[in-house]
Each structure stands twice: as C-alpha cells, then as structure tokens.
Image (cartoon, rainbow, N blue to C red; front, side, top):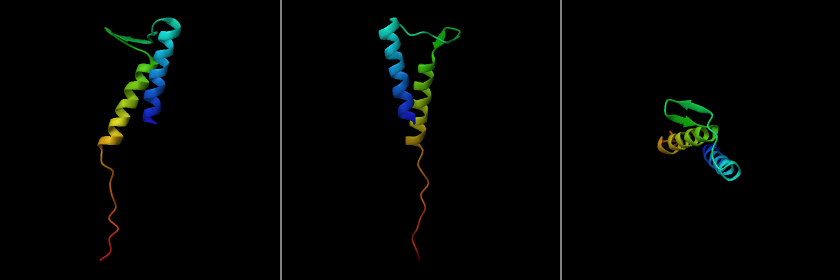
Length: 64
C-alpha cells in the first residue's frame, strides 16, 4: 500500500507537469505549498519507513 501511494503521487505530479507545465498547489501554509500528490508521497514514505524499520513480533513455537 505504501509503495502504491508513492508511485501514484509521483505519476500524478509527472502528469501535471507534462499536461499543465506545472503542479497545481491545493494547500498553502505560510511559504509551504502542497498538493494531494505530495501528501500521498509523504504518507507513503512514512508508512514504508514504519513498516520496514519496526521489527515484527515473533512467536516462539519451540516445545520443551
């Protein structure tokens, strides 16, 4: 899911640049400007890092 978000955000930005010669910004906070594709890329990257860096708990199935 995380990689899908990253790739779809990147493709969306690429298509905007090819079709409109720029990316349309949706949110402007101070001097920062974001669009939906940027948000998808950021959330996908954060999700990917969380999934890959946090170890999964293992169950010890050894019998005594």
